[in-house]
Amino acid sequence: MKKVLNEVESLKGEKRFFYLLCFLFFVLPSGNQLLSNLALFALFVHSLISFNKAEAKSALLNPLVFLPALFFLYYASSAFWSSNVDAVASALETKLSILFSPFFLALNRRFLKERYWLSMLKALVYGSLAVFILAMLRATYRAFLEGKSYFTVDSIRGSVDVSFFTYQELIDVFMHPGYFATYLGIAALICIYFIFYSNHKIRWSFFLLILVVALVLVQGRINLLAFIAVVGLGIFLYTLKSRQYKLLFIPLFGAMALALFLFFAPKTLKDRYLSMPDFSYTISGGPEEFSSATYRLANWSSNWKLAQEDIWFGKGIGDRYEAILDNYKKLGFHQGYIRGFNAHNQFLEILIGGGIVGLLFYSIWLWGYFILAAQAKDYLLMACLTFFLFCTLTESMLERAWAILLLMHFFPIGLLVAQKRLLGEETAET
Image (cartoon, rainbow, N blue to C red; front, side, top):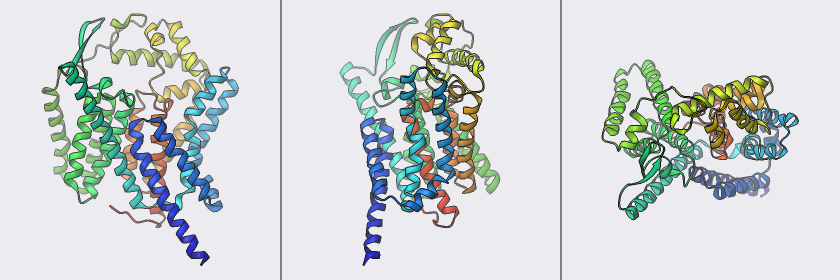
């Protein structure tokens, strides 16, 4: 009787864990702090209810748990050479998921199954699609009230027409465009996975089309380039392995379709994607001196000089941002100071805060995740992690919870399932 009761309780815990994670994956693309915190708190309570001592010991020894924990603990230790205590507390609060989420997920390893993981992937796709549809409906309503699809603002370059259906105006109500474009890219890669491995190829092809259009409209250029690079590389490697050379026409047709779309696109999209950037700038100039490309160049140049001042251990997690702003002022990068830019590159951001040692811990963590995915031959996780790393080249992704929650739940859960598959505890399902 006791055995039966334990089995029933285990089944209840399994279902509870599954539904909570599906809810979390669905709401993450919305950027809604209340909903994501509610899901995280419920997962924490669930982990306490279903706590298993053997799983806890195993979790602590799992590299997908201790690799990010080592990075977090080193980064937290930089508080000892930081003077801004309030900034330390704020930064650590944002990054707490790096320490705790993999552990609590690994505590529930026994509940994870391949079919549950596939449902979570679908929840992330559906959540991303839902947010994009809501954003388009909001933009349509605003356009209806205005009587046209754009509004006009005065800028340093004269009057500029700003579309309701692109970039910040489209998606800022949910989250920053660069972060949402990261969700869109990963959701699109999931769609490609289901096109290959599910029986509903038309449905997932349609979803993929919508997500790529969303990626273009949100105007995450590095995200779009990263997506194209990852997909192109994947098709190339798969073609070499399978010798199905006709597959090489897929990226060609995709590029032609994208080019055709941009040819008929509104002027704002053409200007964003097709205009050749001028890389010359004066660092102390006003906003008229800069484009989005030269802002990044000035950013990286300034912050690389700053990073070299404390190259081994960095400025510390608490003093990092203040040091960045002070350096902008010292170098005369007034626009960077006024706009409060961070490093806009995750590797530079960590180098400034934690030095080479911090960057080493970060690199070991993410390389470890990639190796774990490669050992399990989980090409979806490998593609998504590569895409995510590309996205961090122009955004300090781990400075906001939107990206941290995605990184610390999507990849650990996928790796836990991959580990079980590698050990023969699970078989691949679609």
